Length: 90
Image (tube, rainbow, N blue to C red; front, side):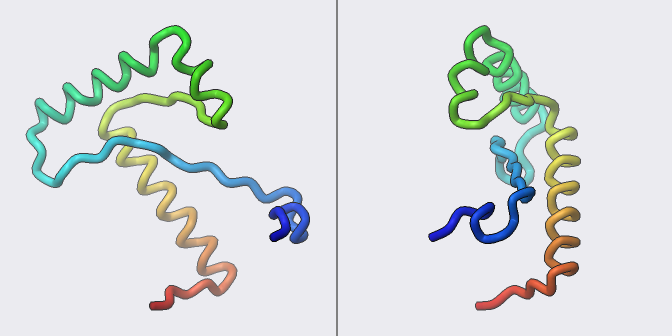
């Protein structure tokens, strides 16, 4: 199987978001506590060095910031799908 560049798309890049999600209706206090704990771990010395070789960069924020990132990603990929005529199939 060819790489994306070998298939004729040398400038195509892809980024993703790895995040913690909880159930709808999770108490706000618990959501904020988990987010604070994740920010604390992401800020620890050496964390970026451990995930860097995996192509990852820590960007821990608030639940509201994550919501905006998820929505921005959804809009971005929906537009790409429309532009290229991609349609869902079963």
